[in-house]
Structure formats: C-alpha cells, structure tokens
Length: 163
Image (tube, rainbow, N blue to C red; front, side):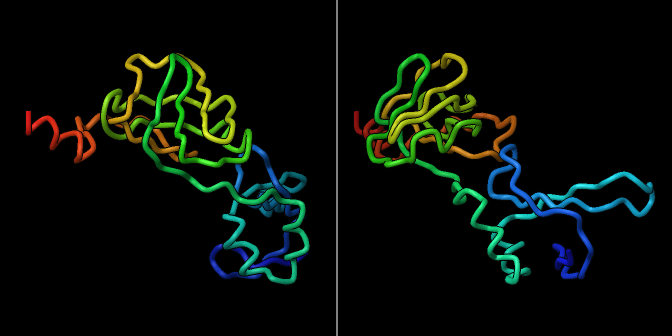
C-alpha cells in the first residue's frame, strides 16, 4: 500500500499496524531495497501518520486510544505505590510507563509502572525515599536517567521559610 511517510514522501509499505511495545505509534513495515527478502520497520506517531494518510483512517480503529503523559502531585505513597486522588485513569493504561519523582521528597527516583487503578500507580520496586505531598511526578514512556534538582513545591518552600 502507498503511504505518505514522516518526511512527506509517498512510499510503498507492506503493513501498517499497532505494536503494543510502542503505544501512540503506528508501526510501518517496508521491504528493504538494499537487502532483498528483508524488511525494515519505522514507527510514526499515530496522530501524525493518520493526518498525513487520511485514506487509511479506518486502520486507526484497530489502534488503542493514545495514552497521554501525565503530571501530578502525590496524595500518598507506600513502599510500592503512588496515589494521586485527583486522577481518573483507565485501569492499566500506564502499565510499562515510567514514573519519575520530579520535585519534592524522593526527587530523582524512577520506577516502572506494573499496573494502575483509577488513581494509583503500582511500581516495580520499592521507593528508596517514599514520596509525600511535597512530591510531584511525571508518568511517561520518555523518561530516562534523570538527575534530582532538589526542588520542592513553592507552597512547601514558603512554609519552610516562614518557620
């Protein structure tokens, strides 16, 4: 089938599919021009791919709804979980994502989400320092080895300065 690729070029591809290892991306398989009989795979953000290829929009029905990265403030945590009472996530929609404590107590720690409920993330290993209400977090597939910045929420810092 012919598609418009990420660079706006029309190309012949063998398949367009969803790969659960890369949510929010379309997996495009091409026949290799350099090595006959072999294939090449590229991943395009689904939104970009289907915008460039509106005639293939019917394929998007087989793709799960995109899961967005999320940020928030910890309501409470235990050894292997983080809760944000303000969230209303779809259960298990963040399985496999990373959660990073970006500010406050426990800052800099990264864990992998093994499951989630509507407002709780269960992580793959215990927190070294349990996050608390001063802790902000980011849930994303694009989190790598981030370094702590020793930041706290402004209202927490202000309370410390008043004491």
